[in-house]
Image (tube, rainbow over all chains, first blue to last red; front, side, top):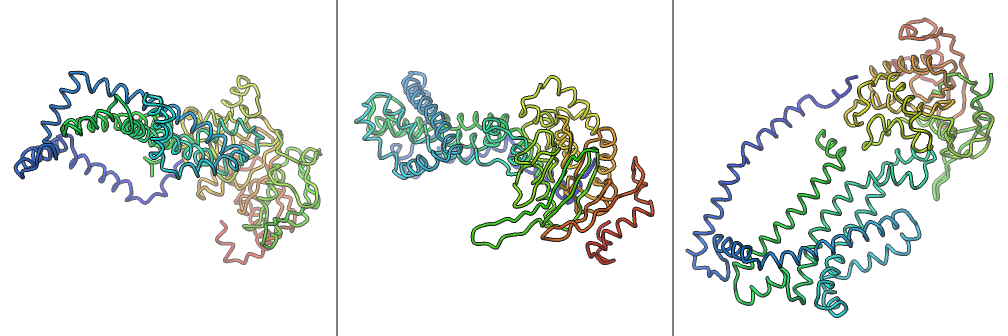
Amino acid sequence: MTETTNRPALAPASEEAAQSRLPQVFSTSGLLLFYLVLFGAWEVIVPALGVKAYVLPVPTAIVKSLYAGLTTGTFVVDLGITFFELIVGYIIAVVTGLVIGGLIAEFRFFERAVYPLVVALQSVPKIALAPLLLIWFGFGLQSKIIMAALVAFFPMLVNTVNGLRAYDADMYELFLSLKASRWQQLRYLKLPAAVPFLIAGLDVSFVLALLGAIVGEFVGASKGLGYTVLQLQFTLDTAGVFAILVILGLVGVAGHTIISALGKRVAFWQAANIGRR
Amino acid sequence: MDTAISLSDVTKRFTRKGLPAVHAVDRVSLEVSDHEFVCVVGPSGCGKSTLLRILAGLTPVTEGRAAISGETVVSPRQDVGIVFQKPVLLPWFTVFDNIMLPIKIYGLSEEKASAAARQLIELVTLTGFEKSYPHELSGGMQQRVALARALVHDPKMLLMDEPFGALDAMTRQVMNVELMRIWETRKKTVLLITHDIAEAVFLADRVFVMSARPGRILETLQIELPRPRRLQAMTDPRFADYVQHIQKLLGLDESAAMLGH
């Protein structure tokens, strides 16, 4: 059977051309050169313009500070603490987001009773709750974990609700015609159809959990990357501040990379369809 | 012969708030015997798909009675297999798992059914594609999977709602011949909905011709073409007579008829 020819004949050719043009411009060595020039220019031009190191340090100073922090272990301990808050908060957000989102999507009662409440709470800027959390849960890790969970919870919830409703209406009809139970509908239809949404939720929530942990540390903490960033700021060690920003950036990128790789594996059919179009 | 499907004075009106009621089907009566292949043909929007949805137990009648094997249809039945307009395959399941879906949902023995599924894969000529995913298949192949899925739990009858309507003309003809071949090996009772007059005449023992909305049965035609039918059946002079007769019934003039086939 060959009825795949209803695509315009030119389309594949132009697609190929677009694909082959990309690596030519953005080859690995080209990118490397680009960043080398960029950071080189920063290194030379910024001091030449008389910008003070505490305003904008040069890249080598940032790297030095990063290296020192990592080798002496101070950054490593901070990273460990912040990472712990991030991960625990993230897991709490993901699990509660999945469970409450699932209840809202599946049961009319929860949709009517819980969803408006959650949306109302969402419109309160959660960052502003940080001082309150400090009063309730103290200066320890607990208040930071809860902050991270609070900030990361909503995108997970919304993506779960939307994802569980993203199934195809005709497929739903098929399940009705087979008299599938609600559990079977969930297992074979709604949950798989929700996977791309869940991955998006996991992705957004991760970065937000990191944000929540850092904000929690800003408000009141005695350790962690957020606390150390403030300490470095007090001593005008801007290179140190940048070094921590680099670490935070790497944590965010690592999380995103792992989650999207997971997404491509789990929602393989979607990746295949996008590749076709 | 027993009555597999019977509709008596079935009327369907769709009512929505603030809108005039849509009279989709008007007092339709028909009977289908066991192992019979019937087609319902009619213009778009004549309520023929509504008839199928009523028989599938997916929508209730407004008036009248729809029955399968003598029992009034109140909900979907396990002794019925359905092929929809679109293949509606689960993109996260392989061909094999898609075919096995009714077995999983009905909670039947997967061990026993997997042999049946393999036979069906052979019957619909998809051998070697068991582990493929739907997005890797062409439209015609996807509809073959849908057909195998409808047959996997060995239902007594098959309801088909314009199953090849979304395929190109050439593939549709191939699928029609394939369907004949498959039906000859598995003599199910089949009710197939189509707007393609030639398709209806080619496939059916009897053709029910429906009018535009509100859908009524205008006439029932016994198709006396010999079986097994292959493409040559379309060159039979009686074939052209049937097609022309239905075209006249539906008020299609000569030029409009050219568009049909």
